[in-house]
Length: 255
Image 1 (cartoon, rainbow, N blue to C red):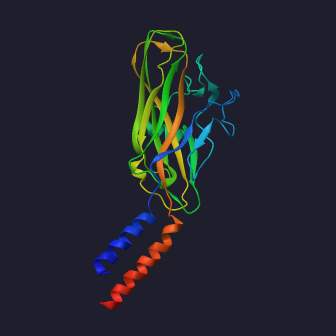
Image 2: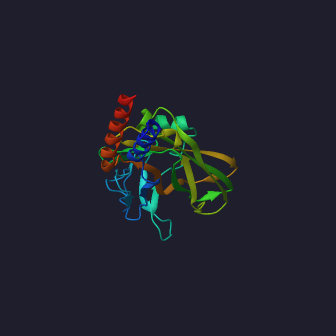
Image 3: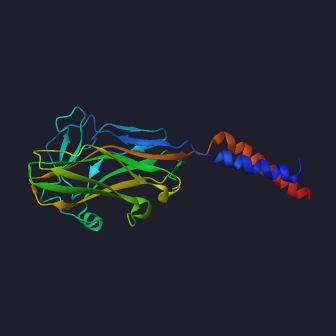
């Protein structure tokens, strides 16, 4: 075998050895099995969670600044997570305010030992809804969500802010309906081997227009999903890799 062929073989085997799994959904939080416990703190095990192979998904918890009334369906058939953003508690109007007030939901994903996450070209998705209590006059509200992670010790926002606007046409107990939202995870790239990552979704709002008033507001969230890949060095290829390196050494010695 000539030197060029040896180099090509080593390159091919190295690529196979470090090849990732296909990008897929790493975890989904659906909250279908949640129980409304009537307390402002999420109990352990909230929501129905499904995780992909080689991924351990932690429970969803709320930060100190976010209160929850529990699971709800607002009269519908499918439960979801209802955040108790009341008129008074719905006051953070910037992402910085939300970070300071610790208004976030959090969960942690951990790869199987010896593996690592790759979020290149992937995203975090969820469904978002605004619910208004009794209102008078035209009221327009927004609910925004910004993402931070432990990959950089929660220093920088990941991706763009997801925002939902709801124009309430003077109705009693109305809701916007759920809208799918997406935040890019590409900035995270490929993490270190065995590195767990904590995701924090920060919530804040603004009243952008209208002259009316509303008795209370709720921010509802459902179907939180994280897309990515787990890089798995395949043990069966390491022998080929070492053989290739040995072949390369032999070629170099014969020069």
